[in-house]
Length: 111
Length: 113
Image 1: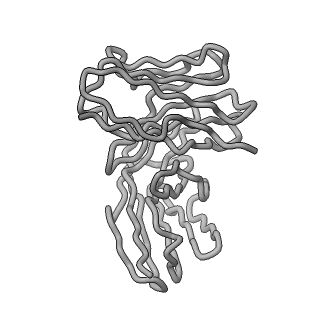
Image 2 (image 1 turned 90 degrees about the vertical axis):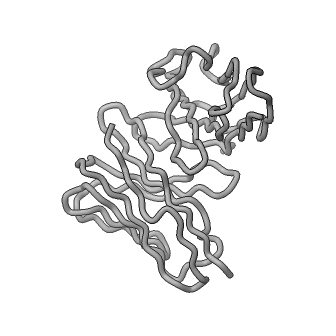
């Protein structure tokens, strides 16, 4: 099992500030996914990154896959209270399409 | 389209009691998953079904957990007897095929007293 480490564990910021959360491993991944899980709900897929160095944008969210495909980051610009949630990264195994999740970063955006 | 439906949303039981959770996947989704998400952790796969057959149950504690998907649609997950460490959110997910993402239900939050 390839271990995904996410940091920080918790992050609390004021509305309008920027934030970055990280997903790291010592292993090389074929692809990584990012999910957001709001309280009382299931995880919702935000993005899949598959190419080293890839950058994807989803409105105010920017996702980057490391050149060596061992790490990824999620940057939120001008955070809003609606961005509050648990951000999970997950490895999607290419042989059996199973997901292995990191422990997540809990983000709280204060109004 | 309707999402993955799970019930109940919450369940509180005492240790050593039994409990069952129900999942109705998105219509037409052949693959169904059950995950356990302990507070402060990411979801951990318990079992995967393809239609009505088990693909992977290697992480399912089979001495107390069981799951079935008899007609290849709905699924139930049972715990008997429950232990304190089973307190968690149990998530169900389904997928149409390997090229499509998993869709998660909102989970059942289980508290063991």
